[in-house]
Image (tube, rainbow, N blue to C red; front, top):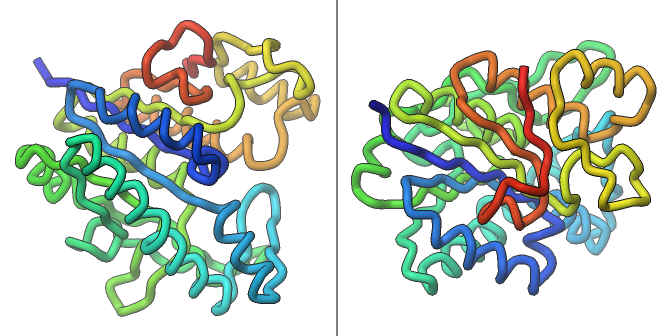
Length: 258
């Protein structure tokens, strides 16, 4: 029987809020089984971009990444945010190692082809180095993975953290019984955005498509949930979406099912 692995993707709003971040770190550090954390930090990167006079550009919840934006993303995700998480986990006696996709050839990607939209230096994942992660976990290390990947030709690329979490969960499902948790600033999928208690406790793929058509699900929530269904279809056991409470309990969040 496969042992358990919990992969948690944490959003930038939580990382940027000192109280939420501290509570999240404490809860995550207490997960007993093998664990991996995946993070972005988009709100933090956007704040630094604005301070530098760079206008953030988003299309359908995804960032347009020109060369200036890429530089800020690398500095923010792989530097500031990644080391903030790692150092706080060390404080809580959780031995973590911070990684970008280039470290250990962890995540190889290719630059996204220009179709209707030119996303710039955005990477679409080609391969996750699951053996490298397996070795780290077997050494009792907790990988902390940021949303920067590489093309193995010296180019770093900005890659959606939700996708990294999903593809990592799929790759590791060969070795573990994987639970994937998307942790952000909402209690789950809300049927009414103005009411935090309007959580849809269970979401199927058929329901998802209807809710997108009716514009109840929109923006960045669409690719997040698309990644969830992709993971379930490719070996991941359980997926939950909610706020920091889902680290300790799954009673009050959204469970994603096929």
